[in-house]
Image 1 (cartoon, helix red, strand yellow):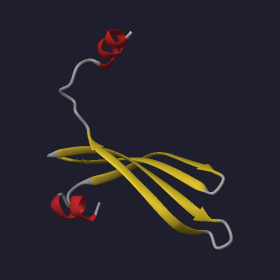
Image 2: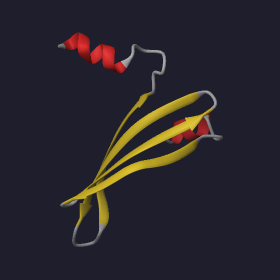
Image 3: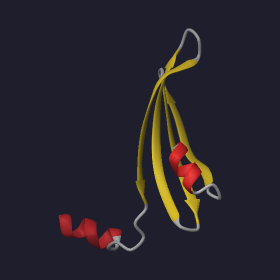
Image 4: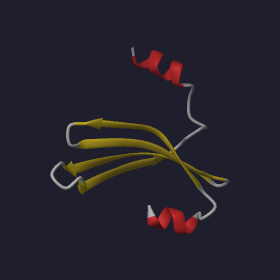
Length: 78
């Protein structure tokens, strides 16, 4: 994430969803700038005794707007 923000400092982060379940917090976010669009999910494990983050798992991928139509793609799978 640090590398992404250093390479594209003009970017903007938008939190799209956040869900708390037990001692986990899931956050879906989008990072956009003129040259790039990324979607990410971060899963945090929280220590309930101290309310601090124990560990975080970060998953991200560049958004591909030039791919096939999603509806046609799903239909082809069936």
